[in-house]
Figure (tube, rainbow, N blue to C red):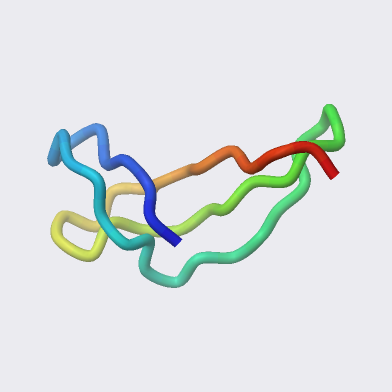
Length: 47
């Protein structure tokens, strides 16, 4: 799964990605940037 790293300002593959459910019921992917280790987050579609 690819996400945007705010620190690197680039799209990268999320390392250790896991699917989580937000408070509003939407799904998201959460993980770390492979380069700098900053937390990355990507909101997925409804379902």
